[in-house]
Length: 236
Image (cartoon, rainbow, N blue to C red; front, top):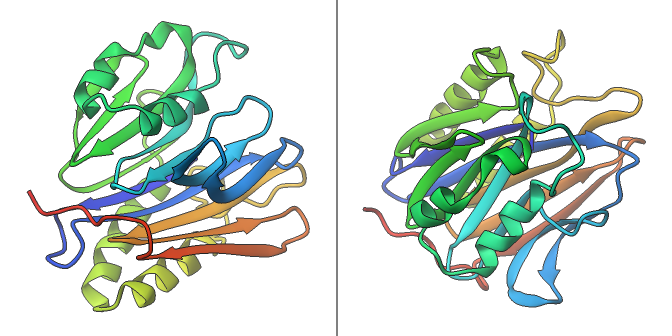
């Protein structure tokens, strides 16, 4: 993922709302969101090269998502950052305990969000903090502030105010995630370069999980799991 926006305890109806884009090389083999054959409790995409995931959700609401980060951590070639996602959703450690157990120097740069009631943000340097309220992050290098983070956070806040139905909110968020703004990567929400771009857009609203997958030829495939297996988070 290269852009993640989260609203935690912002809406009375939906304790968790997430909107995220994963940017990746088109050539990297990927399987879109699906129930996992090796653990049917989990839905999410899979990286077919290393076996991890960029975002995955378990039927009890436990989930994780990750972005790459430029300029920190070890050089590329270590353990896949996507394994941090798959290991968490398969396990039962608390978000904080799991985040504290990660040896960040073993991985290339990342931002990892893990949630199971509490929502914890960690990076190569350790636990950054817990998330409550509006939050957004990208794969900007340390110390850099990218405009698209502000844009995503503000859009999410206003979209939540406009809708009473999860399906309507999800539809508006997916449209936002799939709309190019123009300009440099620092402000672009939907990336479409010749060999690299936004591969998937994912929205979670309560117990609604929707993923749209974007190909190099601008084709779109959509996966929806609506209230059949996911337990909505409760407000804290």
